[in-house]
Length: 137
Image 1 (cartoon, rainbow, N blue to C red):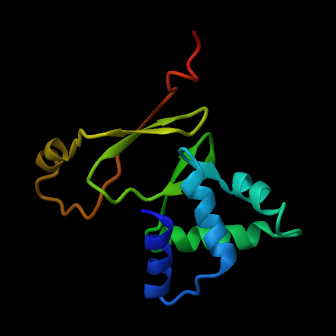
Image 2 (cartoon, rainbow, N blue to C red):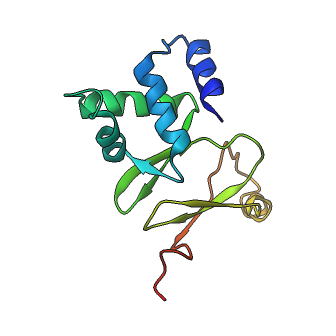
């Protein structure tokens, strides 16, 4: 997903595409991996004095709800990144820096066999660890 797709999705879902919302999207487009609400507020408060966590969380929740951002939990904190939309894949996520690496392997074939009598609606497969730059030498 890119900013233009995200702004279009906002409008399609009946939300205003404001300058502040666009700046939030620009932050995530420039981010390499998952980022926290605190990372975002530190970036935005330089331009918007007094911007609240409530405003940030409302927008992050909205973006997640309509599929612009995806969320995960790292080190006990919710983190966000642009939703990947180009093909089905999963992620390795560095627990230190939040960078991600695509994994094209999907375990759903085995899971569907194990849950043959169940209706699976969705799935998310993530592996956590340290990337080559963050792991101790």
